[in-house]
Length: 160
Length: 160
Image (cartoon, rainbow over all chains, first blue to last red):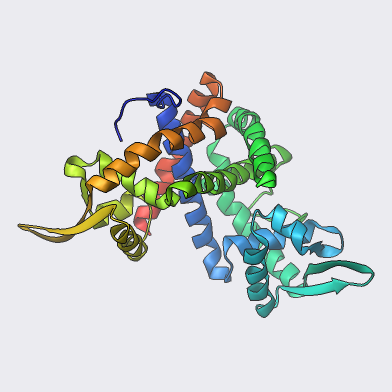
């Protein structure tokens, strides 16, 4: 939309606008592409993210509330997701003896094995679509630029 | 997941990994935050994107297939979306006399007015959450890095 600026929100300059659009496009197209790359394995991107989180956690298990925070999902959305993954045999839900604070999601052996098989393909795709298209200096400088933005958005989200 | 590299997919280095995670986090958290910022106006991010596309098109209208491509949605998903936006009075669907190739989505006066009111808030949020947190050199260099990635992903998507 071409329109005049307002008192409080100066319109984006041409340079800002093209970066913003490139960022949006890369975000959306990468999600789409990675989702499509995972389809042959019967996994959605969200499934993959959960498998990774659990695989890196002590005893390959996480409290549901922590997993929701780590994967940036609402608790109710995560709960549905975990139900689907339980049906697929990738995770189980378990109470923890002596811990009344609630349920854990636990990676099953099958979930671990699935991740072990899929991870190299996924990494290949992440390289093809993103990482290998950047020079080492770009990798460093983009991280420097994005890290504080991610940090602030995480804080905002936590307050929500 | 900590695991060994495979022949074909060298594992991400620590520097690559932290960039990849920062990128994913910024993508997801920004989508979440912008969605939340639009809620008071009764719009989803997708609605906003469609309003912008139509506002910039000649006669404020676009062929449905072109709008699907521009907004990176499937035609069926776009069709549902346009139905909802039609109910809200933001767009109409119109056939084009002399053009059998199909339906157009047309921005209504109410859709235009809605965009005119919401856009300054949205731009304010894009600045707060992203653009104003970058130095001018970062804006330039991030665009240089992302533009070819977006370009390639667009081509891949087109072939899908």
